[in-house]
Amino acid sequence: MDAWGLSSNIDVRGCDPALIRSAAHIQDYVIQLCKLINMTRYGDIQIHRFGTDNKEGYSFFQLIETSNISGHFSEELNIAFIDIFSCREYDVEIVKQFTLEFFKGAAAYGSYIYRGEPYLTRDAFYHDQGCKL
Image (cartoon, rainbow, N blue to C red; front, side, top):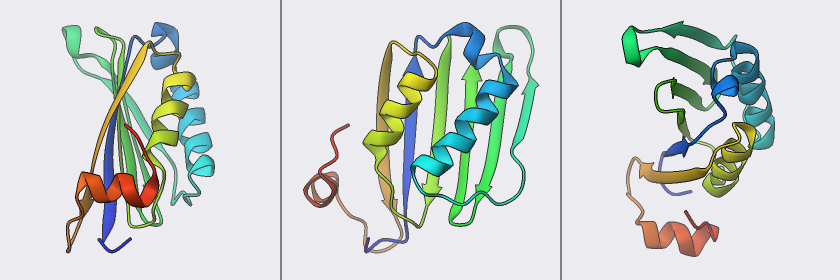
């Protein structure tokens, strides 16, 4: 990777309501995701449920040796919003598929950007990584 790091955003719609309302399930997701994409966790996962009215839900933050992973869960819409930034490469398609299956979602969407100089284009990402979002 010529850039400093890869930042991706994964949205999973139609999640199983019970799964996104379970701190234990969310914690298990983070642990398994880090193993899957070969990221070393740094410290404990921070998981908190907060908000009011229709904005209530869990959020998490996990430091990794190469940056961080965070997530937010909309209980009103049953959507998982996952963000990963790392200076170690990882496969965005694997993250998207894993997250879709882990939260038993109906559909997953993703986007990404390479951070730092030089910026790499989406076409370069496809060509170099063979990833399809």
